[in-house]
Length: 253
Image (tube, rainbow, N blue to C red):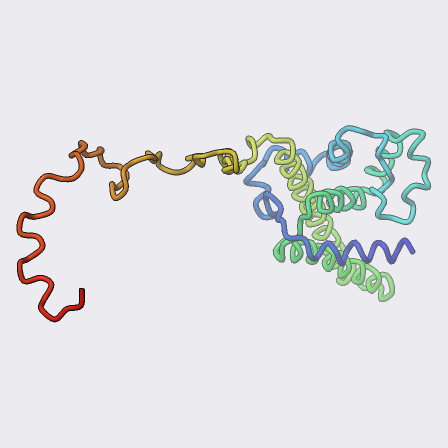
């Protein structure tokens, strides 16, 4: 049941649409001092990042963030600080990965193809180094043994470097979460508009140019009213109206 739930979470994580604020290739440039700190003091940094990911509320701590079979079975509720310290020192890789999964699930962050390639290369290199070590132990060849030692050293260097970059990536993402890069852009609220009611003789002019009502018929809006000329207008009707030959002869009266 737990393994199926874990697989479902991994499948759901592939559909996330948000991206990390900084990818693994850009972490050294984004925060080089913290990357060096994570390289030389990896477990300590992992402890601080997990605590920060929990918003400094250690009552929410679960071993490996609930992603491993041992989660919730190690007495975390009685002494979460000691359990977290044990996790980061004895299961350092799992502690880094668990913090990463926590942030991805919280902010719907997907892992880019470049990050997947780097992480996959790290795992493949470790597997190759392990295979060479087994072959060297079986065959007993000094050349293969030296090659396996070189591969193991290279795999350890890549592992430590990738973990340091991952932890720097997590730190930058939480800096963004905590508003250390400035406030997030907020969409402007549109102005309040009023709707005309039945009891309003004149509708509101919010968003429109003010209009003058009550002008004479035929007078366009925006023009000054013409002076009153009186009625009827002088010269109307004309003096020769109707014409003398109107109506024509033979027209029924």
